[in-house]
Image (cartoon, rainbow, N blue to C red):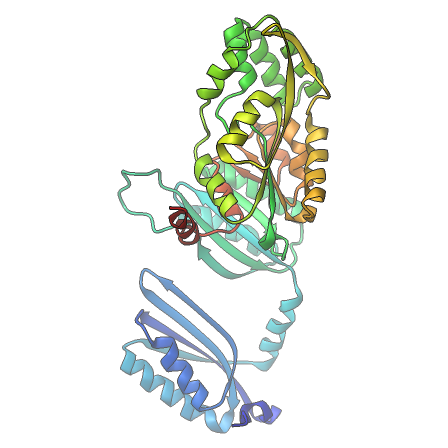
Length: 420
């Protein structure tokens, strides 16, 4: 049958927003859309949310003025039968046209990540969005429902806001997000919603203090009895106060004479960062190519590469003679510049657009690859690194990266279940 609503006279058209509220139950959407179908109306917009089994369902539809009264009567009768409430609001065609014109504007995704998301956090972030003249289209919960009492696991919570518009001052907005991140002990990600965001394919991790909870060179220094000297140089380099290549050479020199056998002992006892096991399993399951780009050492990088079936690994090679470290390295130093070059090289080999890449690291020498990647994340980073990065994670383990990628617990749980 021809849909007569498509030929409604422009002067006779009415736009009506119908919003239904009540306890969720199977069949509500089917019943209401069947009524609209019987009256052959155009649905211009539709949205549904379910919070704690409470449904809010809205339809924006167009009909002729001579038929709208009968449609509202049928919808009201159905709502009464379903034991839900309904409100109707006429929409001005000019208001609708303005809404349609917004479709061409940029869309962004704001992700909030914390141990528990509070009203204060949401108020701070949404106020910044409003001050930039942007509008929130949708809010979605990424993490599972959090119990009132938590004994078996550390709570985590993440919500995602879909925001439309062009920010007046994007740099200021991201600066304010980072300030709120520090003030409320939460993590905030602000990304443009593009096809590249939904099609990430390559992720590159730093190793020390990112995949593991230590700096391997410090562990070697403890065995060599030069921990204080090496640790001081390491800290200065990670803060960006000292050139990485020079600091690397100075630290290596202090390890001269150390027996190479200690490296296996350190590797087998490496403290793995929280969330690494889950993150690696899921990333491999969904088809990511994974790389370690480290200013640390190849011996330990290979150990992690084998443990997690990682595709690429680049790190620094220590020179060994007669079973002892010489205090020198072999080949070029993997510094910040080299990490960014390797990220681009791997993307080229894998035929991945640079906008589909992700880089995660904690130190100043990670900033070049973090700024090069489509999504750069400062992870448990030093202050200077966090200030320079657009996204950072400080409140939880490495699996926080999965939420910045837009995955929901329901999806992640399904992936993890399918592995067994």
